[in-house]
Length: 351
Image (cartoon, rainbow, N blue to C red; front, side, top):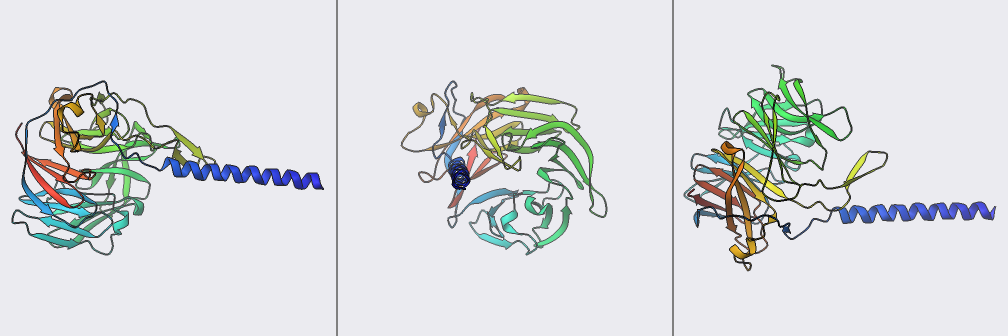
């Protein structure tokens, strides 16, 4: 009897140690690195731009995303709140509240509808919905309810979206074209073999003319896909990071976690004219020589899409406050808008 009790105690102790180990691993894997990476093996060159700001809009401290530009007005969203803020050139801030049907905690992204600039597409992934909001009337005009899991939707037409949907294999998502019928029922028009692995292949997805562009968060991969899914071309950013972060699967495959905190490589991305702009988190060998090390800087690397995504140069933006990294940016014409925790700053590009 005592032997059985001892065996049970040993088993219970082992289980407790395993649980404590998993809790420690969970804590460690969710700690994000605070410093910029230094990978080395490449150099940057400075692109011309005016460091003098055209406008600066003061805001209460928070976390913001730039939605877009309407004429002379800038639209930003204060994350985890229902607040849209409209900034205009006379420094007047107008706040519009999103309707109660939208849970602000579930908003993944907001963008201007490419077919009607007075409409905003509001992605609420946890709810499986994309709302269309009329900013001129402050009312919802449409709700697109997906009856399957989807990620990173990009509007393809007035009634369809490109997005990643669950593939046949676990943790694998395939690029698809999803359309909604007149009753707003979703169905997959076309599903490709173009896939991404959950978490390790996470990234930024946008449409540019007839191309779909996917930039990986954790390595230097740029994937360009034509809108018919017939052609995929791979390009590279200038840094030398090619590996994926490692993951571990727990609870019989139901939970996947990073083995250690993944190192960020590319954080933000946007296209404008013939250029692809990427906010990089990787320092080049010559960055500390070209900039003031006492004044931390954000990097926006610029690639020419007309010449096979060749590197053109880098925009160096001094941070408004030390430690306050750029949260979002937007480029239209010769204007660069940078978003920080307490202000929105408009710069002028001259290249």
